[in-house]
Image (cartoon, rainbow, N blue to C red; front, side, top):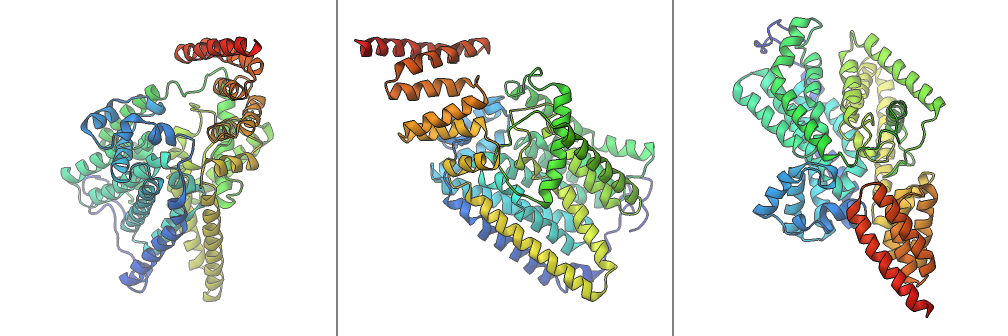
Length: 526
């Protein structure tokens, strides 16, 4: 690449996109066929989601019982989408609108909702490929990364879970933002910069996890755009250039903290040192799951971090960081890729703990691209030093890895068939989750399998004796069996916990249930 000019305005001299034509494949048609084949495989693999049902985990609050979404696309409900700060502990109006449009088109047929998720995943894959090819000129490497993104098992959750629409939708706008930014850098003008702002804003309105995107743009300035050198003047200018983006990110962060206030875990329950330890382990787990995506689960219960795991993961992160910095002096993609991975995970790594999960597959949807970049360009550098015979061996190994990854993704999609298969699998691959047992209890109770519901609620309460909704639902299950003496103490305890938590609405509702139970019990005794 050509040396950059110190002025960030004259970007025409700041970067060269000249690359050997052979790197793009024998012809443009060859590259097009490669990407077409990738998308065709993705469609085939993910076609299983079109047969899946909604799952009893956020799908109800997002779609099936959400009165605003159930109306379809109406003006009043679009207004609600923008004003509903904190509904389901989020603020993502475009995501709400996309669900409304689905109901307008497909009603409550889950196949249509899953189809929309798949379309967005395909579009995100194409935009990722287009952005990387445009920014680097390396068409085959861009296709390789797009393939990893499209077919990695860790990304199944983001696509197969209808309520996780926010992931695939925000990725579409996020990758479009990156592509628009490179377009702006090549020939700057205010209209192109405005396009970057608009696309970024749309991404934030889909999922606020994109708040780290301005930092990703700075990483792109370092590599592959070669605009950033390590001196304060250049860094300062590039940061100032992105101030409007940082302002949007800051505003989105503030709104998100307000929206997630009720979901942010109590500081006493998860102390700062505990959250830091879990964050270190989570980073290590994500690196491990990239290469060995086994025992994947929709829920990874938060447990007290093991000191040995903390030390091992910390040493792993230090080792990779040191290697990336040392080797990155000549191989800049290592620094960009590693910092992309570390940085884009910051909003969800658990420093500010939201919910009770230790980590989640869906959080890797965009962050893994950083590691994919390191792998793709690293393998390319290795291949350039190999003789033709060794390159054939390398390509064979990579093809086998892709095949195994595709099979694993297909298998993982099967667990999303319905709530029963999903949460039964969760309890099989974890030590048991109070949430999974509770949801299974709800599913069994609704289907009239009362004894199985009771067994699952009891397992949930064994893990967390203070789970209020499990207490009240277990009382309801006992009520159905006319076991009033078992139900009454449970509902009394639920009311006490609800009052202690300040949940007066639920406490009042359960007080009414208690009164009914006492009345039924008195009649039954007679």
